[in-house]
Every structure is written in structure tokens, then in C-alpha cells.
Length: 268
Image (cartoon, rainbow, N blue to C red; front, top):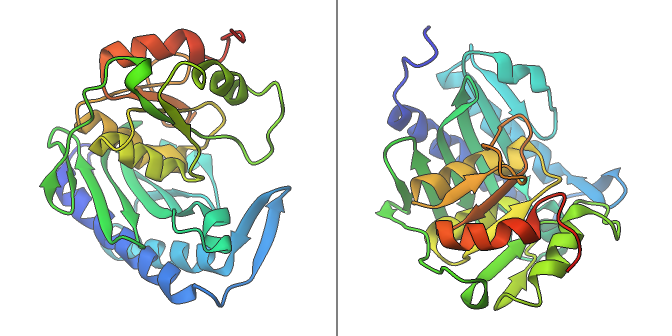
């Protein structure tokens, strides 16, 4: 099968079906799961595993020959397949484990590193953020756009920190640079939800230096299709295999952020 023979809108329908299947598992496991550490401060729950299994079942039913790169069984070689589905079955596991209602399921599909379709689904609010390449972005079926904020002073921005935060981490330096000059900074604990919120204008910008492809794939496509700017965290074109990103609703805000957020930015 040729790598570009499937329509993005066709793939998007499967993204949504898979994300909803994963979300159903997350809701069913609330309050009855066990959590354990993958690494210090990085949890995995029974719900993560059940959600991933449900997503995989949907994808296998529709496209059994496609690759899958998923958080709980990551194999980056899958990105080399003609089509690869990039899945975070529970983005915001720590939030979920604590009953903090900010988490989601992220499902995207790419061909040759190019994102074709993606969904971020919020089970708590039943919000489905969806985008297909060249077809715009939607929230529960309605078109969405990024905000028009052009200055840091008027911007509500979000940062993602890695599971283990050190004082010299690039995301910490960026936070210390941006916090004094923007309107406010948020750290929600879910990169996928942050990106979805940039896409619909609830946030004006968001960045992450130390992140994985499954955290960012669907969300980056959402931002781009909603009219925003999304690059790698150092300003290069976004690379799915790397996962890191810097996003903003407008080019003007993006350019204001770049010298403060880039990985080589010094403390101001």
C-alpha cells in the first residue's frame, strides 16, 4: 500500500474511534486501579495499559499492517513503517492517579514523518479535539482557531516539565525567563491537553524541550491546522521522532518567545 494512499479524513475517523475506546477504559478504571513507577516520579497505572490495549485493538481491526509507537511499549523503529500510529493512552497519568481532572488520550498517524491526522480526547469533559492535514481543526465537530495574542504581556502560556526536574533544565530556564514578562504561566501536567488548548485559543503558547513523540504528535497537528505556529523547541521544523516543540497562536508571539525559550537561552 502506498504511503500516501489513505485520505487524512479517513484516518481521522479511526483516530477518534481509537481515542474514544481508550477514554472509555480510563473512565471505567477510575478509583479501582493500581499505580506503580516506571522511573522516579513517572507513574504507570492499570488504566494506562487498559487504554492502550483498547486503542491497539481498534487500530488492528482497521489497519493490521500499520506500525504503532505507543507510550507503554515504545519501539521507535515503528516510525520507519509506511504508516505509523503514535499513541499516548493516558497523557497526564499523575493527574489521573490523584483524581485531578486534566488528562487525555492522544492518537495520531503519520507517513514518512508527516502527520496526517490526530485526536486529543478529554474524557472528563467529553471534548474531542481533532485535526486532519489540510482540513483544519475541530472541537466536537466545530471549527477552532488559535488565539490572536501577539505580545507576551497579554499571553497565557503553558510549560511542560520532565518527570524529574533539575534546576538547570532548559524548560526551567525558559519558565524563569517567561514568567516575569507574560500575563501568566500554567503547568497542567498534560502536554497533549496544553497543545489542544493552544489550538482552540484557551492558551496562547506552549513549549516542551524534554518530551516524547506520543505526547506531542496529535497536539502539534492540532495547532498547525488551527492556524498556529509549531516548530521544534530550538526553532527547527518539528520532528516527530524528537517530539520537542515550541508553539504559539501567532507568529508575533512566537518570535517574542524564541529568545526566552530556546534550549540555549540564558537566564535573563
